[in-house]
Length: 369
Image (cartoon, rainbow, N blue to C red; front, side):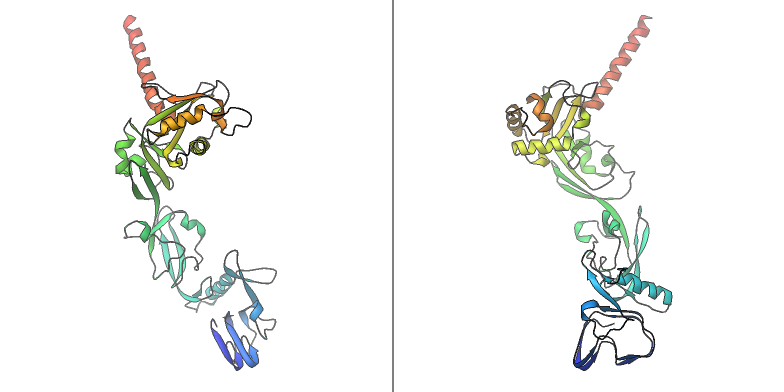
């Protein structure tokens, strides 16, 4: 291959006369003052798998396959109607030949191949090239859906392997989820991918907050309240906040829960009040038919409650209102101590009280009988 520059009176990229050729590439520059040949003056055999750059191929006959860089995937493609990927064609020839020790990366450099193993649950072996980046080794994009750290190294951002990582030898990579915690706790956790793991079991700093009635632990991305049994199935941005609750009462039978996206409500509150989106958790309380009765807003700072209440109570509720369910509010107020709501955060406790009451009634009836 030629990846550099060749200059001379009669310049040839490979040689002036060749006998047999296979898997030959010229992506360099060849400049001759009298004659220029991107490959050779004379070939005694029929060239096989020979590739040259379309706009720079000098004296290239029909046996030379012209190629160009495709900016959509940053790989060389043939310029004929097939538009085949050149490194794939070259490596197929390597495998078919059986004698070549090197392979071709995305940039058409010759490299020594090696194997990296991706641990569970991916459990996959991938051929890459020593001295090449994972991207240039054409590692599939789906591999990077997880955070990858070499086995035996401390899982942290500094040790993560990514597309620009240069491979020096065969390694095993362990997939992790990353949990970023803010609010009352500021920590970053790397959790080895295992779809059976629960938040309360593996993130020790969250246990006391998950079990507390005074704090809320929320999934910022999905605007969902979390508990100890919440599964870890992806990267998560988690906030821990002291419960400062504002209740927004909603007009009866106006909005069904299926038409309410709590994340969108949180965004609307942020726009309306200027409160940081990460300081807001939203839930809804519905009646037996599924119509929203209240919007429950938990804020990280008690001083923000007055801001929210004032903003809600001053919404102009006409046809131009753009705040969704909040346009049907009957007013906002602080949560009354001991108020029982059927929102997610209160549902478990409420159901337990119903069950307890039911058992008491049953016992009384049995006693009367």
